[in-house]
Image 1: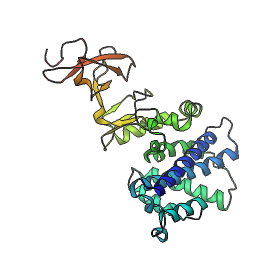
Image 2: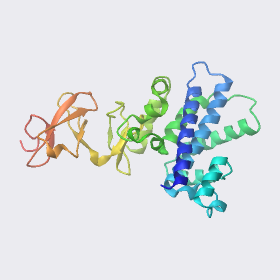
Image 3: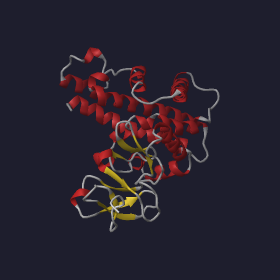
Image 4: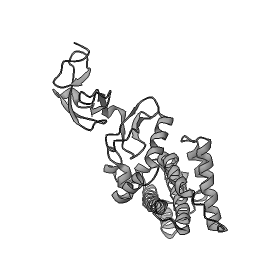
Length: 294
């Protein structure tokens, strides 16, 4: 990554996190005022525009979000223009077109996407005669349906991007707990996970919700807390304690190098020792005779 990419990445990451926290803090207000509604609209749309731009930057580099007339500038000139605020970036509609073609958006998602943009434009350019209070709930749907598909985990420190509760790291524990307990976020996220990836769903080892999906990219991603990792890193076995099928998760990369390894049941949350059979490679609870070789 060159210095221009680094500077743009730093700015987009930092500011996205401020906007998304601001949006949810207002959306989850106990006694919402008109100001909370307006701030939810402004902050959520701004968060989308920044994470959308970051999404493009990750895939196309800085030339994907800086307008063409600057492409022949030197690195030093570009950094100076960024620092002074004189650089021109690609318009939202162009980035929206790019990410809309890269993620899953159904008819309702597209309506929601356009609705937030329309509300934001009214607020900023004309003002609003009435406050659309339904936008507070819709902001949660917006987070689930759109923001969660744009790789916001990549805005976090490396240790919080994978094998971690990324959403808690993004929002902070207080706002994270409020989002889970005071909104429809969990139910909407589970519903979304099943609609997109119904064939291989697990309880998340991090947040316990039945929303840990195997995506088309062969990653395991929790639609609630953002816990993710490469499919090859995880193995699954049956639990002898609660009898859940395929819910004991273990380190698939290291189990073959040990007599047994400790796993954790994503369903009952208990720790279970598991071992790989030396004859057929089937993984069973330890100590126990291989289920396939009995």
